[in-house]
Length: 124
Image 1 (spheres, rainbow, N blue to C red):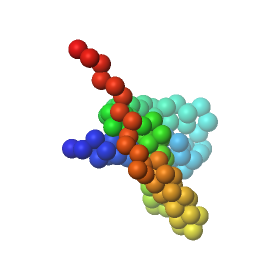
Image 2 (image 1 turned 120 degrees about the vertical axis):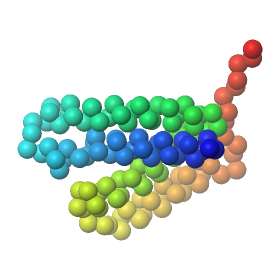
Image 3 (image 1 turned 120 degrees about the horizontal axis):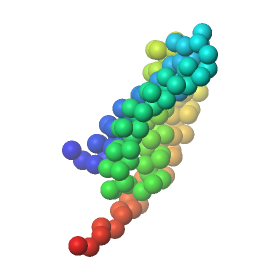
Image 4 (image 1 turned 180 degrees about the horizontal axis):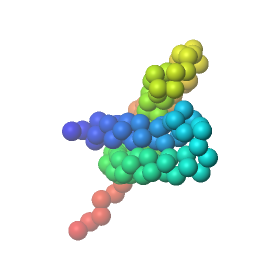
């Protein structure tokens, strides 16, 4: 599987976990004390890191740090919109489109015409 595809899939999985860790408590735990929500969110975030760290290590084989970050931000919005609409029952807003277009521009500028920075491989 190509590195960019593997990185994108792993970052998408990690973003699903992180989106739930950051926001699901607003719906599911709003009647609990904040520290209970924080502890549960940390537990969910553990799984996010178990996928995100390998994703970034794999991606850094071919992508620059900036490219990894912009890829992650674009994936975040892609995950967040369905989460907000279907899970949190938020209305679809035109602002989602504008934010998405801005991120598409950011992706374009980070990936255009520049070969990704590849870290040097140690000799031996």
